[in-house]
Image 1: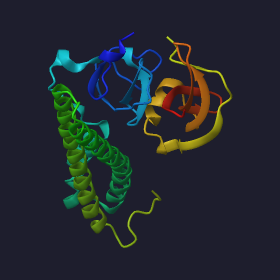
Image 2: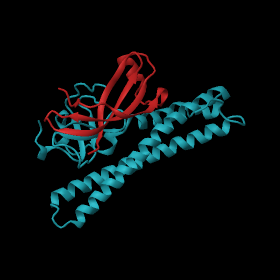
Image 3: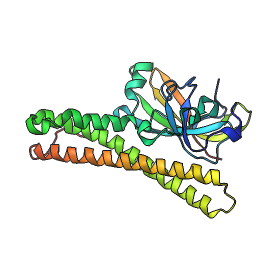
Image 4: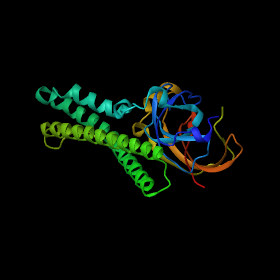
Length: 193
Length: 78
């Protein structure tokens, strides 16, 4: 069991064990750590493959120092972000040549992706605010070690980058869906969503 | 390695997502089978490997005829 003092409380870790959670965690994949003071010493909170944060055994993860602290925001781009960008790329030609039926389907599919992406934008926003508050508290506390301040600054910058990128992707998708909607006949797509 | 053992009845059970509202639906079906999957939450007392007891909010997926899968800890309540 990983000693409590070595357990990451922020930043990113690599999954080295996923026994019993093969759908939730992928081996050798990087996961974002969420601070949680209520955890046991042997616990860690990470955002898993479901897109939500859950408590796992800390020993399922290793710190990313071995990879270098260069696990930047791009390397933890979420599946939904990739899906949204891929969706726009794949369908943007339909704005010039798509039939109403196809555009209607695209609008419904895109809206579903947009809903999931928006949930991640909110999560990222909350996390960015949380890291900013943690940094502010640490700055105000004269006993905070310089190394801890640096760690929090890196985490806050990373969280802000992730939020900014996801918000930008969400806006791009929203703009794309608006253009699709304008091409649909009055009444828009017929399916409920 | 069992991460925790549920030692009380699960209370305050709620369905928090179902069908296409579940992000992992395709992976769930591929791993455990077709079914009317629902994502649920509830509260229970759990025993950790250290022997310590905690009150926790748990999340899991379930489908009729398949049962509960991927039980995990969302947060501690105590």
